[in-house]
Length: 260
Image (cartoon, rainbow, N blue to C red):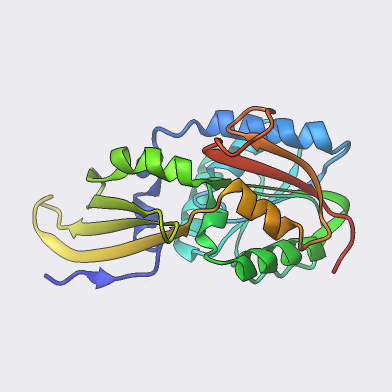
């Protein structure tokens, strides 16, 4: 059976929480909350971009009384997030939105995006488009927080990501992961099979190819110099420690100065 090529995070949405089962989302939410509380005196309206199945915003909802909105380009991921919010009776509004085409009638104190979602933006122009879109809907003095993974992270991660397999419900998957350092692109290719009730017969097969551009800290800082954001901090990992060229994940904290 020839696999059907599908848009990223469409079929994978059914398996995403299984793929991420080892991620400590509560720790990650605590870190984002700490960053917000450290750098913003009275945040109320908070927006998450590229929220996936919503676990970070749902975790934040249990920490502080933020007015939370979370968005993702994938309608399938947003549907999963809404299901989880209903089950948890959490007050988080989930909407579908591409973070390179930001549209909102509201203004926010804080906008954040985690888990290297920005790495899905493959060039400087797309990152600048995202940054400027955020600037339009941030309140004066508002914070933009986002992380990205670096070449060092890809070099370390590719070994344990490659040849991963698993299953959940009627789906099973196999992942191939590779990093091409010269082009600075990291590929994760998922072969996904949907099984019949007998758990053996394959009804459909799908293929999703996830391509991420891996940025160095130097490259990201060079992009930010083209904007009017004020760089508040650049943190390494999940601590309020200054990131450097050896960091595997960098969290940028920017303050909105003015619209451009």
